[in-house]
Structures are given as structure tokens and as C-alpha cells.
Length: 79
Image 1 (cartoon, one colour):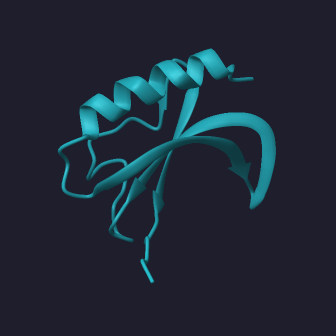
Image 2 (cartoon, one colour; image 1 turned 60 degrees about the vertical axis):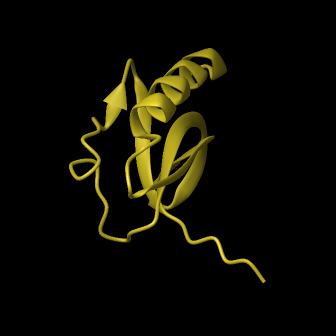
């Protein structure tokens, strides 16, 4: 199981790595989702502005030091 300290370390690493990437919109520590259900485990979720963005297009592994990295398309709308 991923600890908060492990997730925070990966969060910090990815935030620095992705800050200038044009598809990158944010990053968060979140509950890991498996088979459509959220678990008690943590992951680092990379938020992107394209539904076609993948680990490969962002040059990211799927896991760092046991911490799962999710790529998640997210649109922020201001009203």
C-alpha cells in the first residue's frame, strides 16, 4: 500500500517534470481506482487537457517507486 509520504515524493517529482508540458493542467494525490471502484490505496493523478493523452505522450512511467501514476482527462469550466 502506498503511503502519503511516498505519494508526496512522486507528486513533487512529477510536478517539476511536467510543469511546462502543453497537455499538463494539474496534479493530485487521490484514491486509486481499480475496476471502476476506488480503493484505500493512493495514487498520483496527472490531469491533462486532452482525452487522447497517455503515459507515453507525457513520457511517464505507469509507476514510480511503487506509486501508481494515473493520467486523467479533466476540463475546468469557468462560469
